[in-house]
Image (cartoon, rainbow, N blue to C red):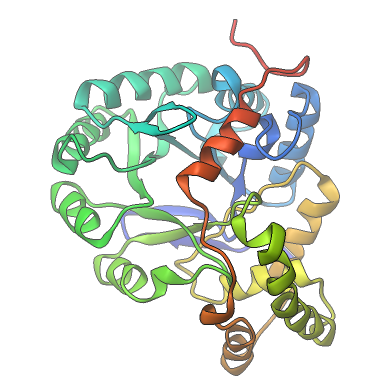
Length: 323
């Protein structure tokens, strides 16, 4: 089956039905892949129809992730790629994450990303985390100028609340909202998804692999819910991961998940989720199998983010360096 394409938001951005989250390639959940291995996985994704690639300036030691994507783009047709990157996380320390959204910082980050990626423009530029010291209007105002200059095509927000989304959208139309969203994490269904649909904003779900719900006692409790989904997956003739991803895909054509992996076998499995067809009743049945009040543990938090970044920023012999 050919990879379908969908519109993300109503500003004109068109992407592959499934995106690819690049963060893990440079070591967040595991050791970084070599440049050659990373490019091999990314090229395979492209050859199978994935054209929407998601990175950020803080992924990997010394911007390794953007540098890797820059090397990839030298070997692929730029006009066929929808490239998303992010800025705004200034510093990650053992006790806190510092967010910076000043216009000057936004511009310097964008210039840095353009250089590392080796491109003239970024398709989708996200504010990675929302700070409290700078009004969102100031940040988006600067991004709007960069849209007018042709450096950015579309603007996105990541982990933003409803008030921030409305205020940002009033300055310049927001194309996409990236949030944690899965069978296990559905808080955005109450307020944020309806708001995005009201404003014409696409939804880009991510699901971190380092998650408090899959550790310690929480893992034992949540295994009961997992077993229910596994039984349903058997009925549909697919893997449990495919059914969970198919559930996300069935939330609407304006929902474009970005699962990442370092293994081609898992990449193929993720792509296979597009072939899993569910009726409205089956989607509801899967939702009911994982009642939110029975899910043990919290969604990803900043403390966990720091743990994952500490791992990501431990250089290895394979870590990519900028020249």
